[in-house]
Length: 153
Image (cartoon, rainbow, N blue to C red; front, side, top):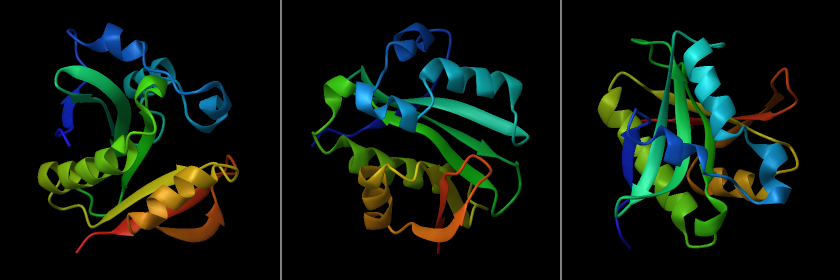
């Protein structure tokens, strides 16, 4: 399987990133790339919010952002994670999340806890995250989404 490359959204790729979209039935589960880029500009939750594209052979296949407090060990949140509808069902979701986790460990070596949220109805994503070692906190955030954590060792 070809490696997935993580790159920041920038002046060269932002328009192509905006073309990423999920299947119609998944749209309520994840913010659009446009919404996520707005979050990166506004930074509504933490001090930093960095948007990234996921690509294989220079073809963009997905997107995510990392919201965090620089220098913290336990305030790193993956958000907006999505594989474009044209590239789903190819195993890229698990491969991409593995790469994202490795990327966070390398770029933020102080990070000991990665968190994310999942819509309660999104059983496919819940299974993916559980298979990757994330555990549910058995509680919901203010938007009714289930919170998952991954402890790094």
